[in-house]
Length: 170
Length: 317
Image 1 (cartoon, chains in turn green, yellow):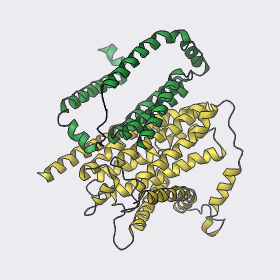
Image 2 (tube, chains in turn green, cyan):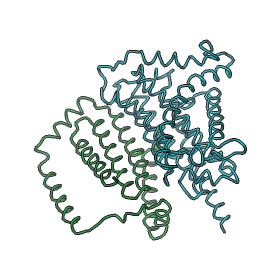
Image 3 (cartoon, rainbow over the protein chains, first blue to last red):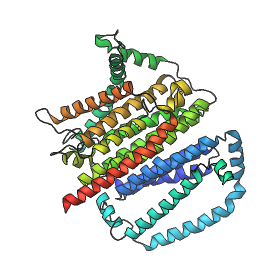
Image 4 (tube, one colour):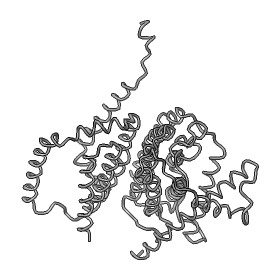
């Protein structure tokens, strides 16, 4: 039962991602991307990582993708945007990325064949994730928080209202 | 609860919440009427409750029109998202010691995830409508939701810290001695405001502010599709009220009466309070809304997290 659920979610994730790549309409592409993220969340859940699944929905699908949609609405490209996107999706442009992806895919399949099983089959509770994060991995958490702080300072600087008159008089 | 039992309860919940949302449309208008010194809909049936059926017949028989300039598939898909997301949110609400659809160990995060997915309904409706009022409403909605979501999650972290779990059942059971609204007063205050903003109800209904944006994101919607948005909004109101009861007011806990009755009574009182807020507070300007969110509410929730963490540590030591 769990196995078939896993494969169904995997098929949904893969096909949604492919559709997201090949859409000319940016809004449609984003909707497929959101579906793919939700499918990945289901995969995490089935693999015994409910906390990661919840964060996938909350952070990726719930926050980051909303910002993407926000930008698309701000730009509101319409027909002209679709036209230029269709040019970018010309088959000729797929050759080199296609070859590179195929290489990576073959490597991945080869690597996966070496490893017997990827999951422990045990569900990891949020508490255990927290203990791991603030125990052995506390350095990574601190580094991530520093990165976020830098981003915040940068955003504040960009968003600051420059008072032109004061600059001139000084 | 057995698998079959929770399935039947889930079905019952679906019907009960939809019915509740329908009755709530009438109940809200009546209550608003009383508070504003007028009658409200009081003609049809006892106390005017037949108004619900009349509204439903009206909405169901309206022409189901899709504007030719809209993005057809997304236009139809958008209103269903909010209803589905809100319905899924009810799955983790514990109505009694054994009355729930599922008791996830990430229950609270699941609820937050579902409310954040409900945003797409508004955004996609605005995008698909191809109308400038809808687009403005959608833009506002995106900014508002993102801003208020940030401290909505944070405001609940105090409760999680006191309980030590994300499971809704564990959170209610941990309140046996003292309901959370006393130690987590700041958390309740901020969560309530974030909750109203998330379900974009008055006074935070800027995405549809009718005096400046005609009807905002659902300008182009009519008939049943419009009703879906309304249903989603009322479901959101019920869901937020249920969550407030479970997280801050001891859920099903209470003397004499059976647990389910206690839960419903408390939820009813919270819903009435939300309607009172709607009647009492005017809509803020858009920049006031943003300032309020980022400059006051976010620091307040952070303060709550620090204080709760400090006190929890001190109690342990």
